[in-house]
Image (cartoon, rainbow, N blue to C red; front, side, top):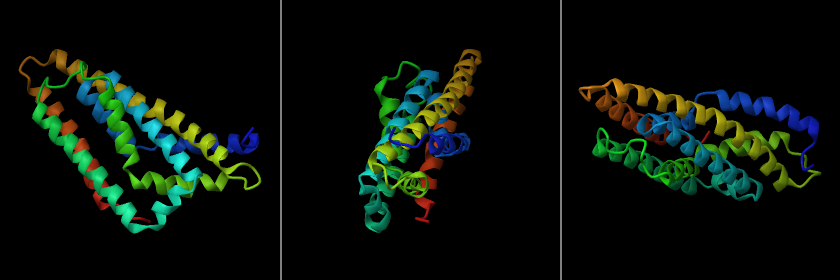
Length: 208
């Protein structure tokens, strides 16, 4: 095994506790579920999970440390991510009620989840701060980063996906009961608000 079994058993509950803590990924998946139904929430969560594994790979190769130590790279990633989230918010508002419901293209929530996760420099810094505490220098470092990244990604997939699915069920139920379209308009505004809030959060974060 690339990771000592005892270390892995210590890492799993710590990773699960982090996955259960509400954060940007959970909010994003909930926003996708609220926007386009439960399936979109799960697909968004899958994109986020793949993004997390990519971050683990980058960190294991030592590339993540370059981003952490170079302010320009950090800023470029942060502003690109914030801009993409704002673009998503605008697209939701432009689509309006019924513009992109459960029949939305299957690839879009996955793609959006992947890009939003990859353009969040905080994830890079988190991986570099949290995972090395469990790394054994005597073992292959990259394999350990990938193993721990897989644990984080798997836990995040199920927890964030569940948040997206629950939000999607709420959206479906409200849509069925909404005869006037008022609830649908509020769903659109709330979904767009979630993405705009995540963009603002990304703009205001610091590198610490």
